[in-house]
Length: 355
Image (cartoon, rainbow, N blue to C red; front, side, top):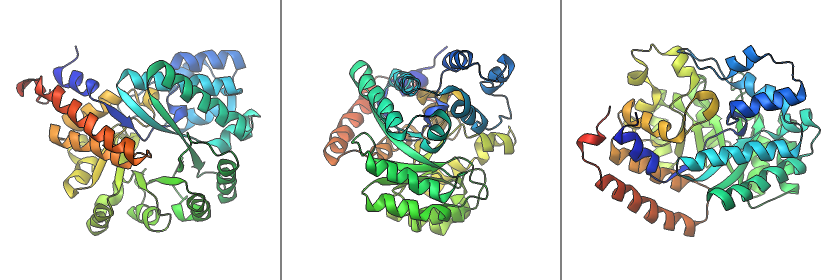
């Protein structure tokens, strides 16, 4: 049964700033593509991909499988993009910035960068027409590939520039792949006028990776960033800079490494909030994490102790750090705030207490 709190959080207008396109693929779509391509994946393996146990495994093997076996045509990319944006719009996500790793797709599929980008942008246009959601594509460096591959990705972005592609990020396994390896690619993106973000401080990696992303790569916001809680002085610097951290309540690393009875109490998201950092909740890999945008917000409230006022601030942090023009930002801040307050005013305080 849906609680009053969940209904409220479903109804509020949202932006999504931290979501991986290949982590949004519906299980039915995955199975259909696997059958079509006669992929070397058993039904049991696919079921395991979409199973999230008490101690969840990482999702990177699923993402690699999609590139290796399933995404072979521009229409495949159009389909998964359109379906993701449809699903997000169902949860009143009005604007979504999502990551895609061109290096893997281009290497594995035979598609060129421009063919792939064009298909994704076409799906963005179709979803805006059909579902009213605005999508934006963020090509993302595969940090398991080489720094030269990262620079090539930026060159592709520059050669095929599009308004629906405002900036870039970096993801995949952070272990032994610190941000400074990719400084040249970030510098080239900044020179070209692209916005930038970076996954850093994920997988328990040192807080200095967050510092490098902020100070050397000069990112406009930070994805994850959890280990910053080990460096309160640097956290204060980030607060002064006005940096927003896009956090993921369902992050697999902490579900694996924290005791179930202490997970919500010891989670770094709770500690980041205590430090005063600006946070914004996101789904990351929604179909693989078994989470919706509504549920990500609910976890902030129910599990991490955020008040409704805190969530209102999170909503505004999302607008602050979204890569939109200032006129849209100003209009949405007024519109989203009014809608949040209206919805809140229709609920009793007792109905909106944690379940």
